[in-house]
Image (cartoon, rainbow, N blue to C red; front, top):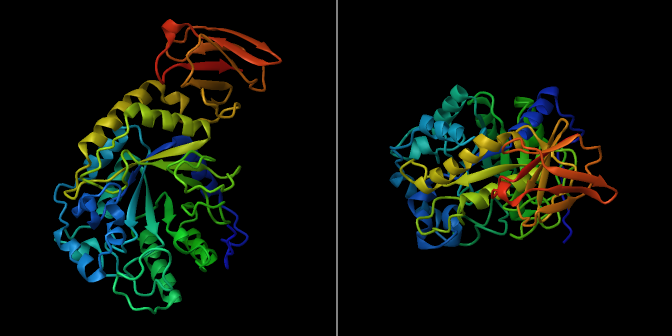
Length: 429
């Protein structure tokens, strides 16, 4: 399918030194927590699997009815410092949280709209402010997810592929007014919370052929915070002005979910993939399809082999607590990272392209060969481009047999030394 765009991004964008430095930080730190939290958690998915934050659209709830939800949202057990302490213990280095999702409800003290957590809920607290303060204390970076799509705002018109018919909005509106509204909210997010990691956009896919004024929006963000990283979940090749490329629930180049329809993978920008811990982004009381810690660890390792960060999602409960099942999973993953984090943090994708048997990551003169699906005692891997000085197991630093030839490098790992997800060979070049 061919899409035409009225605006292709920020014209003549040249990232600042600070921005480039932040991109390096992003690539080095590899692992973050995605948080989908909003008034939709009160309905907890409506008993249907996978709905959660999409419940307004999926159940076709009119705005007048949906606007009752904030009065039930009172997360009195929310503790920003507890969240951040858990994130730090989990080995995560940044948090990306929904400031506004597709339902249009702002999870912060927005002056651009009264439809926000401070004005419309009994909680009356700015969770983004509390989270940012806690992140600053612990050295965790905070990114803001922002939905360009809005099922609530009257000027989100003409309608896109979602939010049509049932909302009760008139069949009219001024698109430019909506752009100005979005710009006002982004200004708030970029000026009221100190230095942030960046903006994580979502929703452009709702109407691909619209003029999203990306040049104006991206330029505005970079003028307010030149170091802030911009990414957009539009499932297309990056536009000028974007500082990292993201992939939803798939590794770069894969398309098991149907979102990543052949988007060209950037060779210049940092990459990130996001994934759920069950089948839902927001909290869904019925969704018990929790992925195992080993499955998520393997995805994180494979992502690193593609040169991509791993942004792992949780949907907090309506009372403000993070699901205990999610915390348990993160702590298992933290134990693995405590032992093996050197092979992930600070690395870039290795010299061997990802294979079914595993991936490689690299830092300086060390190549880490992650053998994820190999049962034989020996494996022939492609050449890594330089002569190998030594080959050792990362787990105990013991030497293993290896030989180099025109066909590649033959590694021999005794069965007795094998560990699921922890069979990592260090090649010193």
